[in-house]
Structure formats: structure tokens, C-alpha cells
Length: 132
Image (cartoon, rainbow, N blue to C red):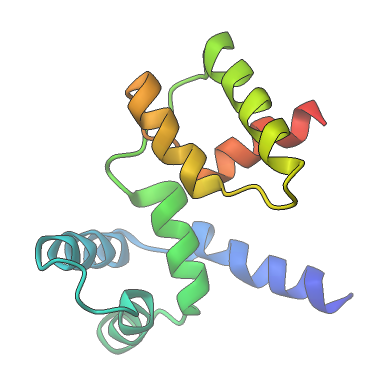
């Protein structure tokens, strides 16, 4: 098994092994982090240590970061995408792909402004990749 596959399996483990106490710790920490003005620049490193020390959960900061931004963030809207939303994603990503790099965080903010829904970056990428 290649390095990439092993890492992918390890990262996906969080979805299966994160317990409710761990989820609550992440939610509480991230809420406090946002309320304090996001002063700490490495919240997921600190969360990794906190989860290990308090709950015996051992996850890399990158894994916790992805879990927060794509699953736990309470602002996320996981409802089905409308045709207008999908078409906007296709047009936007197509335009920015020509420049070399698609900035999914910019699209995420634009989608929230235009459609009033905060969407996960991975979902935006998945919509785009099914069209390619």
C-alpha cells in the first residue's frame, strides 16, 4: 500500500473514531477561538494536544482542521445544491482554473454571500470534480 493510501486511511479514521466528547471539545474550543478574535494562529495544533491529553484521542492537526471545516462547523449547510448553485460553481471554478489555482475559500465566501448558504470546501470541490 502506498504512502498516500495509508495517509488517506489514517485521516478518514477520525470520522469513525471521534466520540461525542471529542466533538464537543472541538466545538467548544473553536467557538472560544472565534470569540477571542482568532488570536492563536495554530488552533488545530492545540486541539490535537487537548484531545490527546483529555480524551486519549490521537489525531494530526490537519485531520482535525479538515473535520472542523467540512463536518463540525455549525455554520455549514449540508442541504442539497440547487441548479443555480451548481452552475455558479462550474462557472466560477472554470474561470479561476484558467489562472492556475482555484481558491475554494473565496468561492465558499461568495456562495454564502450570493446564496445565503455556507458550504464546505470539500463539497464545492466535489461538485466541480463531478463536472470535469
